[in-house]
View 1 (spheres, rainbow over the protein chains, first blue to last red):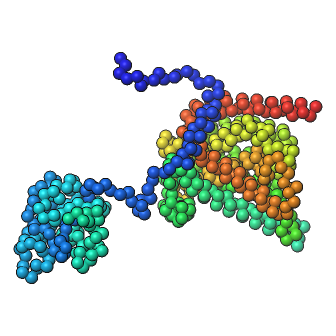
View 2: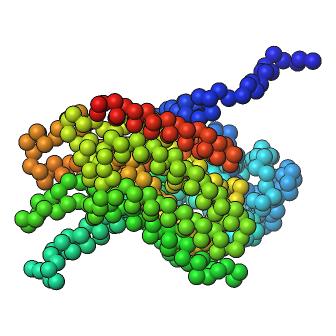
View 3: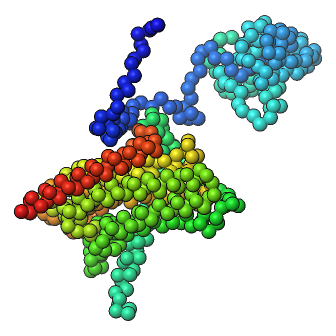
Length: 180
Length: 352
């Protein structure tokens, strides 16, 4: 039974004498490879040139700060609940009166950890966050020698302070600049 | 200045020439590895090595350095003397052939005529054949001494392949020798030098094609790389080798490529003759300049052949063993014989 008309009868005729010295076919093949000398190479010289990610790329997490450099996270735990891979853990603490320039609200995350080996970069934490405190950036987690190295602490995740280091802040913000 | 009635400057001159040519062979072999990788990349729409230095031109140095510092392993079950002799043989025979190739005309330096050929012996082409045949010992000894089934298989393949293809190679050359009437390499080049003497490739196109195919087989290049056959024999006769002994084998292969390109350029493409159909001596250039231009022309021809070698390697797959033997014995040898007989008939007819 013939399902498609793409099937071709294989030609099993014995080679003619001219074919059996292979010369003509080899020359044809060499013509094909030679034409590839002039083709555009799709390779990108990686560390110098980088292929840009798509707008919706979900990479490494960033813990955001507000314009005055205060941490936005209130340790409500919604991201940890939303996380399907259970990669996020946190411990809350109460803000002291002297810490008002550090934390935006009365409660903050004293400990905040994301296990990058568990994380599936689905972005549900970003969607769950009521304070715009966490978002997924345009980079991905670099390689590491130990599993411990993949557990990112709060200081690894926090964005640079926009007041004290504005350039680093803008760089970390990347494509998200002007979004929030 | 004479010593034992020998011209001592002759010795100095020849020693210098030997050093230069061996150095040149090494240098070109080194950069052929680079060219191989680069051309392979281009033919496959890649970029090739481009990290070590600008455009990756220090890549061969890095490769060589790596091979030097690798651990030197001699298998316990191997025959140690022969195991070391193998790569030495391969390298020596690869380098020996360059002695009789005329690299250029004569240079006039310090009031002396310096010939750019180490030894202008009157059996030049026979000498090349003899030494090239010795090359198979490098493979045989190395493969046997490794005491490894794959190596031995590869060595046997290599030996039988070389012997089979040498026949067709010799027969295709006989037709050329009928035209020149001399075995001397400088005589063969001289026969193609002047305007009314054509390059042998024009008179012997079939002979050239046969010679070229056989040269591929002699150098163990794809499509005739059965002795190496990475995927069947995992590297064949140099499987047990490491460090610089492996380097010698790989290097000898590239030097062989260089030398056989030089032989092809000399025998079929006019050697250091700059252009066909033209008598260069009528250009009115100084003889030294003409010699240097001739050397450059020979190098250009050699580089072209090296490119074709690489180009072929990255175009076609390896022959199956029976295909190899059929091509050698049933196709190339009859063709070479036919070519020889026709040439002989034409030569006799023209002399009538």
